[in-house]
Structure formats: structure tokens, C-alpha cells
Length: 446
Image 1 (cartoon, rainbow, N blue to C red):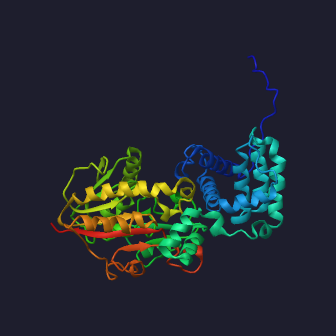
Image 2 (image 1 turned 135 degrees about the vertical axis):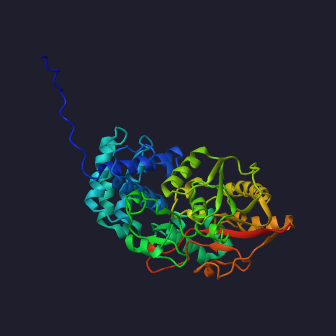
Image 3 (image 1 turned 90 degrees about the vertical axis):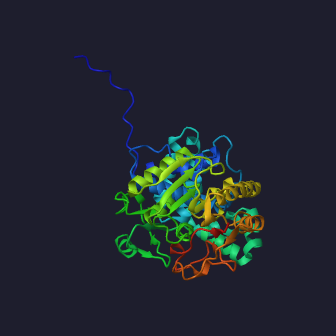
């Protein structure tokens, strides 16, 4: 039998350990910084067979880089007098990923530097700058304290327009506390179907005062006990509060408007409500259905624009409205890069339409909870004030401290809920804080 011709090229050596994760991180940063991709979507092109641990490490590198991107860029500018070459846009993601590991992650210096150089060499656009990558990262590794000396994270890592907004709304000290928490990797919060104490023990976590289980250093979520079995779902402690403000919903007809990806739908269904979940995004509803199937929970799922949804009336309605999501910057740091001041007004106008329409989906005597994961008053307090002034058939149903254990620090003088990232300090920052959320409970009286 004739043998195939032998290749003139020697076999390519296997990639070093950790290369796949770092390469995925660089690709993710490149997509976010240069192609307007969100952090949530940045890893869609990850290889199907990639080890979940590599994917988790890549995500941590990218999320940390985005949280500290102002600081990182300031460090790199100090070491690169001529700046980044315009001919190699992928060079910045390579350097950012390497510097992130050196300055803000528990990664051996030799791995952070060596693998960054390998990645630069593997790409024809950056191969000619591998020596530069090596030199810059080695200088950072030699004196990490000097690299960041004099850089104020509040000024470097938080857009000025957000700093000004938070200082105006909450005061300069609280604005600094919010920004400080955004710089820290968040813990994993989960909502369990039953027995939070058991799951806290199994996952080496703790039960927060409101019943959420907080897990530290969890690793890949899908590999944790109880995930595949549907015993719990990921949900920030603050995000778990709005659905609970509806009280005992067992047997009630409840609409979850703008429902995807479904954490609140799952809460309501697990509590025994007959849930109708509405969202305009078919792709996000597909995720909601997948989550419900894993959790072995059921809901009627409807793809529709909430502002035009004509169902009901319902015993209760939950409207977690689309918003700027500035309360979730710790978990979604790409938001600081993608949002602009003008977005607040645009979103506030949308929220006004949605809340006006949602009220009409509530039975007389029924409750509605309006919530947003925004720190901006225009998307929270101002929306409810406007609604109450315009609709005499709607009144506030104030939240009281005895309804949910641990909720007292978040109740406003008006009886609404306002959580801030700098609250709930529980020792180390890594185990502290929660998303910034606003929620108001309203009752339709006629």
C-alpha cells in the first residue's frame, strides 16, 4: 500500500498547561473592548471541550481586568512611553490579562508572564511584540507596589459621570464605598429550594440573614453539588428580595414581567404560585425554560413585549424592569464601559411605560412589586413617585422589618427597599456586600 507523503513540518508541540484559559481570556477581552460584546456573551465561542475550570479561570481574569481597567491602563501607560501600537489592537488584551494576574490574582508570576508571551507569539498580529510583552510584565512583577503607587481606584476605575451621580444621590463617602466594593470579586449567592443551613454546610458557605446562601471560592458553578439536581439556582442576595415582598403567593396567579433569565420566576414557582413569565427576548426565554427544567419547576412562558402584554388581571405582578444595571457592576463590570449618561433618561422613559402598563395587569386589591438593579434614583424612587402622583388608584404598601429577617437595614423612610453594594460588610470584602437594588411594593385599590 502506498504510504501518504510525510509532512515536511515537525508536529506542533502541545500547548503548555494553562494556555487555553489565558487564550480564552485574551479573546474575551478583545471581544468586549473592541467588538462591543458583553461579558455575558464574551465566551460564546469557547471550544466545546474546554475544561470548565479553564473557562472559570478565563472568566475571572476578564472580570477582574474590567473591574480594574482604569488602574491597569494607567500602569501600562507608565511603562510604555510610546503607548500601544495601533497596528496590533490585540496587544492590549494580552497585556491587560497578564497584568491582571500579576497585580490582582493569586497566580504565579512565571505563569502570568510566560503564558502571556506564549499567547503573543501564537498570534501573527502580536508575535512581533512578544519581547515587549515579556519586558513590560516582568517590570510589573519586579515591583508590584510601585506599579500601582498613587493610582486611586475610585478615580481610575469608576467613570466620572457615575461617581458624580452616586455622590449626589448618596454622599461622597457612600459613593467611595460603592466603588471600593466594585473592585472586589463577588461571592457566589444562591437561592435554595429548601434547607439553607444544609446547603451552606455542603457548599462550605454561610446563610445570610435573609436566607440566601453565600458561597466563597466556589469554582465552576455547574460542577457544584446540587446544581445538576436542581436544588438551587444562582441569585444575588439583593435580587432575591423583590419576589419575597409579594408575601405568601401559594395558589395565586402571579405575573413575572420582564422575567428572563428566570431567577424570580423560579422563586415564585417554588413558593407555589401559578406563574406567567413574560419577556420579549426569545433567546433569554430559552434560558429561562432550561433553568425551570433543571429545577423541576413550571410556569407559563410567553414571548411578548411587556408594554403590550394584555394578560390578566393577576393576583400579583412582579415587574423587574430593564435598567442601566449600575447596581450590578461588581458582577457585570463591562457595564461601566458600555453605559452612557444619556442611557438613564432613555431607560427611565421605558420604565415609565412598563410600570404604567403593569399596574393595569393587577386585580383590584392585588399587589405589584416594581424593582430595578440600578443605583440611579430616576430608575427607582422617582419612577414610583411619578406613578403614585399620576394614579390615585395605586398606593404604596410599605415594607416592614418583621416581614423578612435581616431586611431592616434596607428599608427606606418611605417603606421601599434600597440596597447598596457597600452594605452588609461581613469581615473581608470578598464575603461582603450585595447588588444595588431598588424595590417598591404597591397596591391597586380600585
